[in-house]
Image (cartoon, rainbow, N blue to C red; front, top):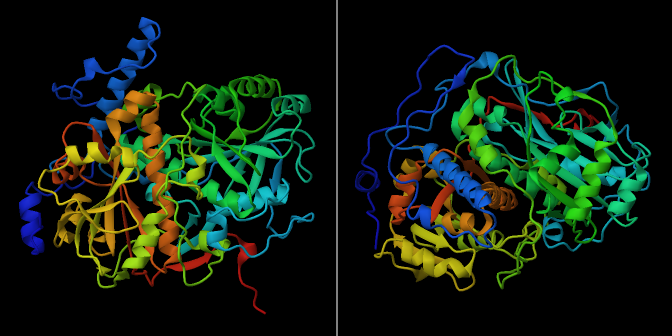
Length: 612
């Protein structure tokens, strides 16, 4: 199969629907947004026949099926179509724009290393290359407050401030849809010199690179939970849905999950800088995460926007498990601790998006006592670089491109390096997850030397190959495109206009080296792991995106995630039907066109270059 080489004809053949609607200028209303009527077609094929592994009591099966129905209803109801976007306010209500940073008043604040006011206390950070971190070649540093500060600064800290005229806004090491940053981070650790002298819960304040004390609890709780070991800590991530919903409406829940995935990968890579390993802990339920972070405490969020529990990671020199009896010990012990701090309010008024609340309830994670071991496949392949790249500098320089030049090319070897890094294996961040890959990449190749333009597919799990091939168009070529990667050429031809059209008519999807859509193994994943795994599918796409962001920077280019795309037209191009595979995230890489009107300052004043 070959695409038409004429950009106009390609668009007219594959994407003949009318142009998307434009936003109107209706006045703001602080009222709940009711769901529009939904179609009466089946939610998905064969729903009533879905298999529930290890059947439990009838009401539990019914509850699971009801939650799955909500997931499918939300997913279909928040798709973008050629004739209509997912429901949102339709304009930006600047009067209710959320403040950019969450903070807690009436509590102790601890600045973190490498701020000059904070002593290093013997912690030293040598020059670390990006490959050393990703390959986990570094010896682990002892757990300390300075080492914690180094990790948080390069995982979730500010990367820069941008200025245009009198306006100023921050960027962060971890990317976010619309630069709205719904993700908040909490640290739970034992007593560390320079912090409080007891085990405690802290909130990370990225604007100040500091941690705010939330709870102090008994030393015995931490000692019993981890057998007396003090060489580990926990990082919990939460989401403030309102941050994204302010701009994106009902689709915001998806974007919050993307951002969690980016943050998971960012923490994993930054931990590797210190020789630590960050691992997701599936044993933790939504309620347990809420309890240990204090986000379930009504009295601390009286007028503030609530946070939704996301995930929790163990960070240690070696892989650290956390069985459910340990979870219970920490939940009970921290509940008896001394809490302090009150969350700030981000907006004076809000729009309530009930559909987000519905899907959040439907995807609450109950915690998993047993999960399959994510086996390392034979995809491990060392990246071949021609130069050593300073890891910390690379993490701080990551940006999202706003436009590409539409001319530059990339060599085939660099593309192969990039794609090899998103394959499963022992590399960071893929050693952080407990499940096997569920996301594959449909790649529109535009400007890659020695690789013909066209549509390609990178299969990240060999066990899904047969089902993918059966689900796609029968006329696809499936030609081997590389001897080392599981990359197949499906169709040749100029796909630039098609890529732009599918990504909400954004030129950036056509003007780079390549763009791609991330296809999730949707039905099978939800049947295997239940409705809460809907979030995990988006987390995995965010992790893939974070790897591509960093690999693009390492190659001297730039990337950007694309959350706006026409969902079902993407499936139509591939020949996909039903919900077996669903496109969850788009991405693109190229040479950026910078806006010369903007001024860039360092993330923190103490990082400004000295005049001398």
